[in-house]
Amino acid sequence: MFRKVGLSITVGILSGSAAAVFLIALEWATQTRNNNTFIIWGLPLAGLAIGLIYHHFGHEAGRGNNLIIDEIHNPKKILPIPMAPLVLGGTLLTHLFGGSAGREGTAVQMGASLSDQIARFFKIEMKDRQILLMAGAGAGFGAAIGTPFAGAVFGMEVIQIGKFKWSAWVECLVASFVGYSTSILLQAPHSQFPKIAIDSFHAHVLLWVVIAGIVFGLAARVFSSVTHGIEKLNSRFIKYPPLRPFIAGLILVVLYYIEGSYRYVGLGIPIINETFQPQEHLETTLKDPAFKTLFTAITVGSGFKGGEFVPLVFIGSTLGSALALILPVSLKILVAVGFAAVFAGAANAPIACSLMAIEIFGMDIAPYAVVGCFMSYFFSGYKGIYTSQIVHTKKHNRLLSLFKKSNT
Image 1 (tube, one colour):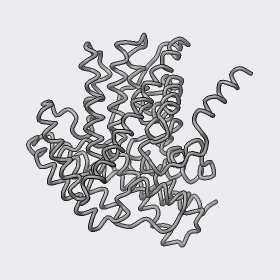
Image 2 (cartoon, one colour):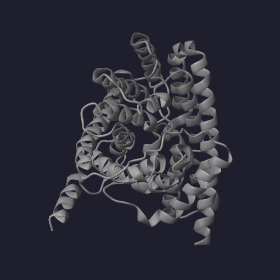
Image 3 (cartoon, one colour):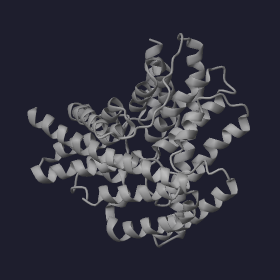
Image 4 (cartoon, rainbow, N blue to C red):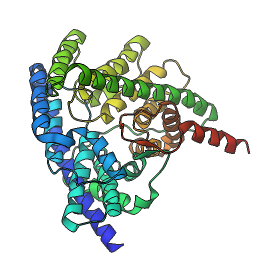
Protein backbone atom coordinates (compact mmCIF):
# COMPACT_ATOMS: atom_id res chain seq x y z
CA MET A 1 0.00 0.00 0.00
CA PHE A 2 2.80 2.44 0.89
CA ARG A 3 4.41 1.76 -2.48
CA LYS A 4 1.09 2.40 -4.26
CA VAL A 5 0.58 5.69 -2.48
CA GLY A 6 4.18 6.75 -3.04
CA LEU A 7 3.97 6.05 -6.77
CA SER A 8 0.59 7.80 -6.97
CA ILE A 9 1.99 10.89 -5.27
CA THR A 10 4.84 10.93 -7.79
CA VAL A 11 2.34 10.60 -10.63
CA GLY A 12 0.31 13.48 -9.21
CA ILE A 13 3.34 15.76 -8.86
CA LEU A 14 4.43 15.05 -12.44
CA SER A 15 0.92 15.48 -13.87
CA GLY A 16 0.14 18.60 -11.83
CA SER A 17 3.47 20.24 -12.68
CA ALA A 18 3.01 19.52 -16.38
CA ALA A 19 -0.57 20.85 -16.28
CA ALA A 20 0.56 24.04 -14.52
CA VAL A 21 3.33 24.71 -17.05
CA PHE A 22 0.88 24.04 -19.84
CA LEU A 23 -1.88 26.31 -18.47
CA ILE A 24 0.54 29.18 -17.85
CA ALA A 25 1.95 28.87 -21.36
CA LEU A 26 -1.54 28.52 -22.84
CA GLU A 27 -2.67 31.73 -21.15
CA TRP A 28 0.31 33.51 -22.72
CA ALA A 29 -0.52 32.09 -26.16
CA THR A 30 -4.17 33.13 -25.86
CA GLN A 31 -3.37 36.68 -24.71
CA THR A 32 -0.73 37.09 -27.41
CA ARG A 33 -3.22 36.04 -30.09
CA ASN A 34 -5.98 38.26 -28.70
CA ASN A 35 -3.62 41.26 -28.70
CA ASN A 36 -2.37 40.51 -32.21
CA THR A 37 -5.31 39.08 -34.16
CA PHE A 38 -3.43 39.30 -37.46
CA ILE A 39 -1.41 36.30 -36.29
CA ILE A 40 -4.41 34.07 -37.10
CA TRP A 41 -3.41 34.29 -40.78
CA GLY A 42 -0.35 32.23 -39.89
CA LEU A 43 -2.50 29.23 -38.90
CA PRO A 44 -1.75 27.25 -42.10
CA LEU A 45 2.02 27.55 -41.52
CA ALA A 46 1.55 26.56 -37.87
CA GLY A 47 -0.40 23.51 -39.08
CA LEU A 48 2.37 22.60 -41.50
CA ALA A 49 4.95 22.88 -38.71
CA ILE A 50 2.89 20.64 -36.41
CA GLY A 51 2.33 18.15 -39.22
CA LEU A 52 6.03 17.98 -40.13
CA ILE A 53 7.17 17.61 -36.50
CA TYR A 54 4.74 14.78 -35.78
CA HIS A 55 5.42 13.11 -39.13
CA HIS A 56 9.18 13.00 -38.57
CA PHE A 57 9.45 12.79 -34.79
CA GLY A 58 6.03 11.91 -33.35
CA HIS A 59 5.49 8.42 -34.72
CA GLU A 60 2.89 6.71 -32.46
CA ALA A 61 2.59 9.80 -30.23
CA GLY A 62 0.35 11.31 -32.90
CA ARG A 63 -2.44 8.94 -31.83
CA GLY A 64 -2.73 10.88 -28.57
CA ASN A 65 -5.35 9.72 -26.07
CA ASN A 66 -6.22 6.66 -28.14
CA LEU A 67 -2.66 5.39 -27.75
CA ILE A 68 -3.00 5.75 -23.98
CA ILE A 69 -6.29 3.85 -23.93
CA ASP A 70 -4.83 1.10 -26.12
CA GLU A 71 -1.86 0.74 -23.79
CA ILE A 72 -4.18 0.41 -20.80
CA HIS A 73 -6.18 -2.29 -22.59
CA ASN A 74 -3.19 -4.15 -23.99
CA PRO A 75 0.15 -2.97 -22.58
CA LYS A 76 3.01 -3.44 -25.04
CA LYS A 77 5.62 -0.75 -24.50
CA ILE A 78 6.24 2.43 -22.52
CA LEU A 79 4.69 5.56 -24.01
CA PRO A 80 7.30 7.54 -25.99
CA ILE A 81 9.14 10.20 -23.98
CA PRO A 82 8.65 12.87 -26.71
CA MET A 83 4.85 12.58 -26.34
CA ALA A 84 4.63 15.25 -23.60
CA PRO A 85 6.81 17.98 -25.18
CA LEU A 86 5.37 17.34 -28.65
CA VAL A 87 1.75 17.71 -27.57
CA LEU A 88 2.65 20.73 -25.44
CA GLY A 89 4.35 22.50 -28.35
CA GLY A 90 1.68 21.46 -30.84
CA THR A 91 -1.15 22.71 -28.63
CA LEU A 92 0.55 26.05 -27.97
CA LEU A 93 1.08 26.56 -31.71
CA THR A 94 -2.55 25.63 -32.38
CA HIS A 95 -3.86 28.19 -29.89
CA LEU A 96 -1.31 30.89 -30.64
CA PHE A 97 -2.42 30.97 -34.27
CA GLY A 98 -6.16 30.56 -33.65
CA GLY A 99 -7.03 26.91 -34.02
CA SER A 100 -10.39 25.97 -32.48
CA ALA A 101 -9.26 23.39 -29.94
CA GLY A 102 -9.24 22.55 -26.25
CA ARG A 103 -6.71 21.66 -23.60
CA GLU A 104 -7.91 18.46 -21.89
CA GLY A 105 -6.27 16.19 -24.44
CA THR A 106 -2.90 17.80 -23.92
CA ALA A 107 -3.04 17.54 -20.11
CA VAL A 108 -4.16 13.90 -20.27
CA GLN A 109 -1.37 12.96 -22.70
CA MET A 110 1.27 14.80 -20.69
CA GLY A 111 0.12 13.27 -17.42
CA ALA A 112 -0.04 9.73 -18.78
CA SER A 113 3.20 9.85 -20.76
CA LEU A 114 5.22 11.32 -17.88
CA SER A 115 3.68 8.86 -15.43
CA ASP A 116 4.53 5.95 -17.69
CA GLN A 117 8.20 6.79 -17.41
CA ILE A 118 7.92 5.73 -13.75
CA ALA A 119 7.22 2.22 -14.99
CA ARG A 120 10.45 2.34 -16.97
CA PHE A 121 12.47 3.57 -13.98
CA PHE A 122 11.02 1.26 -11.30
CA LYS A 123 10.40 -1.73 -13.61
CA ILE A 124 6.74 -1.92 -12.64
CA GLU A 125 4.63 -4.94 -13.60
CA MET A 126 2.02 -4.80 -16.34
CA LYS A 127 -1.05 -4.52 -14.08
CA ASP A 128 0.48 -1.76 -11.99
CA ARG A 129 1.54 0.08 -15.14
CA GLN A 130 -2.06 0.03 -16.39
CA ILE A 131 -3.20 1.57 -13.13
CA LEU A 132 -0.53 4.28 -13.21
CA LEU A 133 -1.55 5.18 -16.75
CA MET A 134 -5.14 5.65 -15.60
CA ALA A 135 -3.96 7.67 -12.62
CA GLY A 136 -1.73 9.88 -14.78
CA ALA A 137 -4.46 10.51 -17.35
CA GLY A 138 -7.01 11.35 -14.66
CA ALA A 139 -4.59 13.53 -12.72
CA GLY A 140 -3.79 15.50 -15.86
CA PHE A 141 -7.49 15.96 -16.58
CA GLY A 142 -8.34 17.07 -13.03
CA ALA A 143 -5.33 19.38 -12.71
CA ALA A 144 -6.04 21.12 -16.03
CA ILE A 145 -9.72 21.72 -15.29
CA GLY A 146 -9.43 22.24 -11.54
CA THR A 147 -11.72 19.33 -10.61
CA PRO A 148 -9.84 16.65 -8.63
CA PHE A 149 -12.84 14.38 -7.94
CA ALA A 150 -13.76 14.33 -11.63
CA GLY A 151 -10.12 13.70 -12.51
CA ALA A 152 -9.95 10.70 -10.18
CA VAL A 153 -13.00 9.15 -11.83
CA PHE A 154 -12.15 10.12 -15.41
CA GLY A 155 -9.11 7.86 -15.59
CA MET A 156 -11.14 4.85 -14.47
CA GLU A 157 -14.29 5.55 -16.48
CA VAL A 158 -13.07 6.57 -19.91
CA ILE A 159 -11.33 3.27 -20.70
CA GLN A 160 -14.41 1.13 -21.37
CA ILE A 161 -18.03 1.91 -22.18
CA GLY A 162 -20.25 0.37 -19.54
CA LYS A 163 -17.57 -0.74 -17.08
CA PHE A 164 -15.78 1.10 -14.31
CA LYS A 165 -12.19 0.23 -13.31
CA TRP A 166 -12.70 0.29 -9.53
CA SER A 167 -9.41 -1.53 -8.94
CA ALA A 168 -7.50 1.70 -9.53
CA TRP A 169 -9.46 3.96 -7.21
CA VAL A 170 -6.73 4.50 -4.59
CA GLU A 171 -4.05 5.45 -7.12
CA CYS A 172 -6.40 7.61 -9.19
CA LEU A 173 -7.76 9.46 -6.15
CA VAL A 174 -4.33 10.17 -4.66
CA ALA A 175 -2.77 11.14 -7.99
CA SER A 176 -5.65 13.45 -8.93
CA PHE A 177 -5.68 15.36 -5.65
CA VAL A 178 -1.90 15.65 -5.56
CA GLY A 179 -1.95 16.79 -9.19
CA TYR A 180 -4.59 19.41 -8.49
CA SER A 181 -2.79 20.63 -5.36
CA THR A 182 0.47 20.84 -7.28
CA SER A 183 -1.15 22.93 -10.02
CA ILE A 184 -2.60 25.28 -7.39
CA LEU A 185 0.77 25.56 -5.64
CA LEU A 186 2.37 26.48 -8.97
CA GLN A 187 -0.38 29.10 -9.53
CA ALA A 188 -1.87 27.53 -12.63
CA PRO A 189 -4.59 29.81 -14.09
CA HIS A 190 -7.83 27.80 -13.97
CA SER A 191 -10.93 29.11 -15.73
CA GLN A 192 -13.60 30.46 -13.37
CA PHE A 193 -17.34 30.01 -13.83
CA PRO A 194 -20.26 31.23 -11.66
CA LYS A 195 -21.70 29.06 -8.91
CA ILE A 196 -25.30 27.99 -9.44
CA ALA A 197 -27.78 28.66 -6.62
CA ILE A 198 -31.16 26.93 -7.03
CA ASP A 199 -33.90 27.82 -4.58
CA SER A 200 -35.73 24.49 -4.55
CA PHE A 201 -35.90 21.17 -6.37
CA HIS A 202 -38.81 20.54 -8.78
CA ALA A 203 -39.48 17.13 -10.31
CA HIS A 204 -41.07 18.56 -13.45
CA VAL A 205 -37.87 20.50 -14.16
CA LEU A 206 -36.00 17.20 -14.04
CA LEU A 207 -38.28 15.84 -16.76
CA TRP A 208 -37.41 18.77 -19.02
CA VAL A 209 -33.73 18.18 -18.27
CA VAL A 210 -34.22 14.63 -19.57
CA ILE A 211 -35.25 16.11 -22.92
CA ALA A 212 -32.37 18.57 -22.83
CA GLY A 213 -29.98 15.70 -22.05
CA ILE A 214 -31.16 13.86 -25.16
CA VAL A 215 -30.45 16.97 -27.24
CA PHE A 216 -27.01 17.28 -25.67
CA GLY A 217 -26.30 13.63 -26.47
CA LEU A 218 -27.29 14.13 -30.10
CA ALA A 219 -25.02 17.20 -30.25
CA ALA A 220 -22.15 15.06 -28.92
CA ARG A 221 -22.93 12.44 -31.54
CA VAL A 222 -22.90 15.02 -34.34
CA PHE A 223 -19.59 16.42 -33.14
CA SER A 224 -17.92 13.00 -33.01
CA SER A 225 -19.34 12.00 -36.41
CA VAL A 226 -18.21 15.20 -38.12
CA THR A 227 -14.74 15.00 -36.56
CA HIS A 228 -14.23 11.37 -37.56
CA GLY A 229 -15.65 12.11 -41.00
CA ILE A 230 -13.06 14.84 -41.53
CA GLU A 231 -10.33 12.46 -40.36
CA LYS A 232 -11.44 9.90 -42.94
CA LEU A 233 -11.58 12.50 -45.72
CA ASN A 234 -8.09 13.65 -44.85
CA SER A 235 -6.75 10.08 -44.90
CA ARG A 236 -8.43 9.35 -48.22
CA PHE A 237 -7.61 12.47 -50.20
CA ILE A 238 -4.45 13.91 -48.58
CA LYS A 239 -1.83 11.18 -48.54
CA TYR A 240 1.02 13.29 -47.11
CA PRO A 241 0.06 13.82 -43.41
CA PRO A 242 1.81 17.22 -42.86
CA LEU A 243 -0.39 18.75 -45.57
CA ARG A 244 -3.59 17.90 -43.67
CA PRO A 245 -3.28 20.59 -40.94
CA PHE A 246 -1.82 22.99 -43.51
CA ILE A 247 -4.87 22.71 -45.79
CA ALA A 248 -7.20 22.74 -42.76
CA GLY A 249 -5.49 25.96 -41.63
CA LEU A 250 -6.16 27.56 -45.01
CA ILE A 251 -9.83 26.54 -44.82
CA LEU A 252 -10.16 27.81 -41.25
CA VAL A 253 -8.69 31.27 -41.86
CA VAL A 254 -11.02 31.73 -44.84
CA LEU A 255 -14.03 30.61 -42.79
CA TYR A 256 -12.97 32.87 -39.90
CA TYR A 257 -12.74 35.80 -42.30
CA ILE A 258 -16.15 35.08 -43.83
CA GLU A 259 -17.78 34.65 -40.42
CA GLY A 260 -16.12 37.86 -39.26
CA SER A 261 -16.37 37.77 -35.47
CA TYR A 262 -13.42 35.48 -34.65
CA ARG A 263 -15.39 34.28 -31.63
CA TYR A 264 -14.70 30.64 -32.47
CA VAL A 265 -10.89 30.75 -32.35
CA GLY A 266 -9.04 29.19 -29.43
CA LEU A 267 -10.83 28.02 -26.31
CA GLY A 268 -13.74 30.46 -26.25
CA ILE A 269 -13.90 30.82 -22.44
CA PRO A 270 -15.37 34.38 -22.59
CA ILE A 271 -18.19 33.09 -24.81
CA ILE A 272 -18.93 30.29 -22.35
CA ASN A 273 -19.23 32.84 -19.54
CA GLU A 274 -21.54 34.93 -21.74
CA THR A 275 -24.04 32.06 -21.92
CA PHE A 276 -24.99 32.59 -18.28
CA GLN A 277 -26.58 35.89 -19.34
CA PRO A 278 -30.06 35.84 -20.98
CA GLN A 279 -30.11 35.65 -24.78
CA GLU A 280 -32.84 37.07 -27.01
CA HIS A 281 -32.69 35.45 -30.44
CA LEU A 282 -32.80 31.68 -30.93
CA GLU A 283 -31.29 31.74 -34.42
CA THR A 284 -28.29 33.75 -33.26
CA THR A 285 -27.82 31.55 -30.21
CA LEU A 286 -27.96 28.30 -32.21
CA LYS A 287 -25.25 29.61 -34.52
CA ASP A 288 -22.65 29.33 -31.76
CA PRO A 289 -22.80 25.53 -31.17
CA ALA A 290 -23.10 24.87 -34.91
CA PHE A 291 -20.07 26.96 -35.87
CA LYS A 292 -17.98 25.73 -32.94
CA THR A 293 -18.73 22.14 -33.96
CA LEU A 294 -17.60 22.81 -37.52
CA PHE A 295 -14.46 24.79 -36.68
CA THR A 296 -13.30 22.40 -33.96
CA ALA A 297 -13.97 19.30 -36.07
CA ILE A 298 -11.83 20.77 -38.85
CA THR A 299 -9.09 21.69 -36.37
CA VAL A 300 -8.72 18.47 -34.38
CA GLY A 301 -9.78 16.21 -37.25
CA SER A 302 -6.90 17.46 -39.39
CA GLY A 303 -3.98 17.07 -37.04
CA PHE A 304 -3.92 20.19 -34.88
CA LYS A 305 -3.44 19.52 -31.17
CA GLY A 306 -5.32 20.44 -28.01
CA GLY A 307 -8.23 18.11 -27.48
CA GLU A 308 -11.98 18.60 -27.49
CA PHE A 309 -13.03 19.29 -23.90
CA VAL A 310 -13.42 23.08 -23.89
CA PRO A 311 -14.96 23.20 -27.39
CA LEU A 312 -17.52 20.62 -26.25
CA VAL A 313 -18.16 22.71 -23.13
CA PHE A 314 -18.62 25.69 -25.45
CA ILE A 315 -21.08 23.72 -27.58
CA GLY A 316 -23.00 22.47 -24.53
CA SER A 317 -23.19 25.86 -22.83
CA THR A 318 -24.35 27.72 -25.93
CA LEU A 319 -26.82 24.95 -26.79
CA GLY A 320 -28.16 25.10 -23.23
CA SER A 321 -28.58 28.86 -23.64
CA ALA A 322 -30.58 28.25 -26.82
CA LEU A 323 -32.76 25.59 -25.17
CA ALA A 324 -33.56 28.06 -22.39
CA LEU A 325 -35.50 30.05 -25.00
CA ILE A 326 -37.65 26.98 -25.73
CA LEU A 327 -37.93 24.88 -22.58
CA PRO A 328 -39.53 26.03 -19.29
CA VAL A 329 -36.27 25.61 -17.37
CA SER A 330 -34.05 28.33 -15.96
CA LEU A 331 -31.12 29.47 -18.07
CA LYS A 332 -28.53 28.71 -15.39
CA ILE A 333 -29.63 25.07 -15.07
CA LEU A 334 -29.59 24.37 -18.81
CA VAL A 335 -26.26 26.11 -19.36
CA ALA A 336 -24.59 24.31 -16.44
CA VAL A 337 -25.99 20.93 -17.48
CA GLY A 338 -25.04 21.49 -21.12
CA PHE A 339 -21.56 22.52 -19.98
CA ALA A 340 -20.98 18.99 -18.66
CA ALA A 341 -23.39 16.83 -20.61
CA VAL A 342 -22.11 17.24 -24.16
CA PHE A 343 -18.62 16.20 -23.13
CA ALA A 344 -20.13 13.37 -21.07
CA GLY A 345 -21.75 12.02 -24.21
CA ALA A 346 -18.75 12.56 -26.47
CA ALA A 347 -16.26 11.03 -24.01
CA ASN A 348 -18.66 8.37 -22.64
CA ALA A 349 -17.86 9.55 -19.12
CA PRO A 350 -21.15 10.54 -17.40
CA ILE A 351 -19.97 9.94 -13.82
CA ALA A 352 -16.82 12.03 -14.15
CA CYS A 353 -18.73 14.82 -15.89
CA SER A 354 -21.48 14.83 -13.26
CA LEU A 355 -18.82 15.26 -10.59
CA MET A 356 -17.14 17.95 -12.67
CA ALA A 357 -20.40 19.93 -12.85
CA ILE A 358 -20.83 19.67 -9.07
CA GLU A 359 -17.25 20.77 -8.40
CA ILE A 360 -17.55 23.75 -10.75
CA PHE A 361 -21.13 24.91 -10.14
CA GLY A 362 -21.92 23.65 -6.64
CA MET A 363 -24.07 20.92 -5.09
CA ASP A 364 -27.37 22.52 -6.17
CA ILE A 365 -26.79 21.41 -9.76
CA ALA A 366 -26.22 17.75 -8.75
CA PRO A 367 -29.57 16.09 -9.64
CA TYR A 368 -29.88 17.95 -12.92
CA ALA A 369 -26.25 17.32 -13.89
CA VAL A 370 -26.51 13.59 -13.20
CA VAL A 371 -29.70 13.23 -15.25
CA GLY A 372 -28.42 15.43 -18.08
CA CYS A 373 -25.04 13.69 -18.29
CA PHE A 374 -26.48 10.18 -18.27
CA MET A 375 -29.16 11.00 -20.85
CA SER A 376 -26.49 12.52 -23.07
CA TYR A 377 -24.39 9.39 -22.59
CA PHE A 378 -27.28 7.09 -23.51
CA PHE A 379 -28.10 9.00 -26.71
CA SER A 380 -24.63 9.88 -27.98
CA GLY A 381 -23.89 6.54 -29.64
CA TYR A 382 -20.76 4.45 -29.29
CA LYS A 383 -18.31 6.25 -31.58
CA GLY A 384 -17.24 9.06 -29.30
CA ILE A 385 -14.12 11.19 -29.47
CA TYR A 386 -11.96 8.32 -28.14
CA THR A 387 -12.14 5.62 -30.79
CA SER A 388 -10.07 3.13 -28.76
CA GLN A 389 -12.76 2.78 -26.08
CA ILE A 390 -14.06 -0.77 -25.79
CA VAL A 391 -17.79 -1.42 -25.45
CA HIS A 392 -18.18 -3.65 -22.39
CA THR A 393 -21.94 -3.22 -21.89
CA LYS A 394 -24.46 -1.93 -24.40
CA LYS A 395 -25.83 1.45 -23.35
CA HIS A 396 -29.44 0.58 -24.06
CA ASN A 397 -29.13 -2.48 -21.81
CA ARG A 398 -28.12 -0.26 -18.90
CA LEU A 399 -30.93 2.17 -19.68
CA LEU A 400 -33.52 -0.61 -19.82
CA SER A 401 -32.22 -2.03 -16.55
CA LEU A 402 -32.83 1.32 -14.90
CA PHE A 403 -36.45 1.31 -16.05
CA LYS A 404 -36.89 -2.28 -14.87
CA LYS A 405 -35.52 -1.42 -11.43
CA SER A 406 -37.81 1.59 -11.18
CA ASN A 407 -40.85 -0.59 -11.93
CA THR A 408 -40.04 -3.30 -9.38
